[in-house]
View (cartoon, helix red, strand yellow):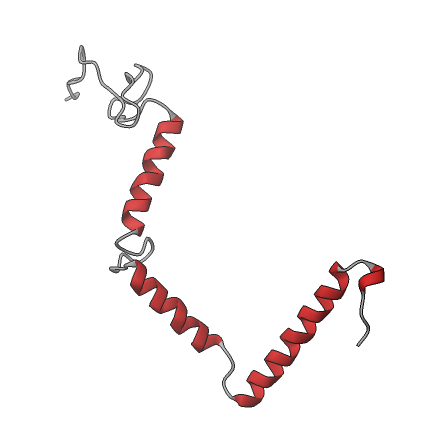
Length: 111
């Protein structure tokens, strides 16, 4: 048995921009164009991302994410004092090298 067209004769409006939805859109469409559909998708994503993880649906707040990033930095950082010293020496040398390449040739100071 075929479904009845419940929207026949009813003017439908886009939920994003309030324009009328063209007849060539799907019967269950709630937006008038691809741009409105993308804007709606981004809005719904931003609402979800404010409260829970997009991938695992676990509750997540900005404070929880900041705590996770802080934990990740300590977890992935140097494990002992020797590693820390080697890392800081490498980082300092790299920064000095980048600084020398950014300076003009007359401004380069040899160490």
